[in-house]
Length: 390
Image 1 (cartoon, rainbow, N blue to C red):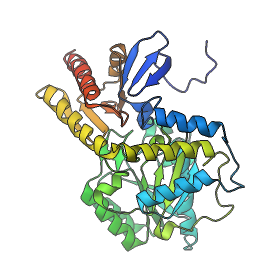
Image 2: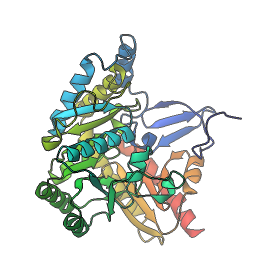
Image 3: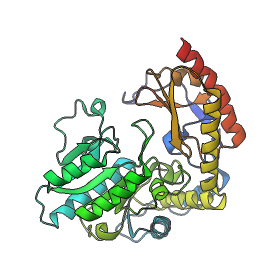
Image 4: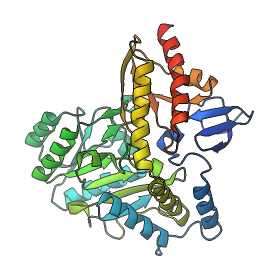
């Protein structure tokens, strides 16, 4: 019996190794990875350049305290700020830590404006993490139950509803920021309208609020742009990253620009492990391979191919509500809860996920080939059809 704390309903499989978009379990069975560790394994498994860079770094220096300057951290910060047109980066180890940093930054921003009880607008069905503050910002009662009292200072509105935001602006002078995912991953692959994001940027400027975008799941080329908000050609004040940034090595980042830059000073925030040489090598190598192998365009093209292929094979199938998403962040919504599909797909050698009870979530590694994408479609569609007819 395992002594690992029982916090996940784990599937009955141990993976021994991986290569590209494939994994092998301890019995030698092969699986096509349509999940990428939940949008983490950007470069798939055992990518040769990634493996070589990490091996070299481990042989030199794994960790160096942030009491000292860290060259890789400065290089990665420069690269991210160049790609995002932002000014500063705080490095941590996960998405919830990045969002925690953003929440703290927004509160300090408010206090510096003499707002005693600063509040942040968040969205229904949002997911921002499992620390107490990020859990409180999350819009899912199932993950909050049992952890009350929740952290205050959050005002919740419907997703994609600008009039609701304007109503809050009229009646609450304590608002300092809006925290929103351009694409809700845990919420069911729900995408903000381009016009909504643009109008949200304008509203935040009018109200002197911080626009804080949680791109933990949708950032790092997953949607066919470096960051999902770039589809709307806007610039946030704060952006959080994690998951795909390190291709499997834990790393998180909170980026700032404009009026959010310079809010934190020495002693305001910190992280022992954040931005260590190993994690920053992982981040730099991930970004370099994405650029060199033109994975932005590939993610966009392969995402369109997958959506069309699923639409073709599932056309007219009763119970398929919608196929949606952007780039390699896809959701297939069914008319009934479909959590059982995860085990059914696993038995057929496919790794998928179900979120929001009835949405099949696909987050393949960015290096997946078109032939492998077709195998995913050909393998998954019969399972969906059989499930809906049962």
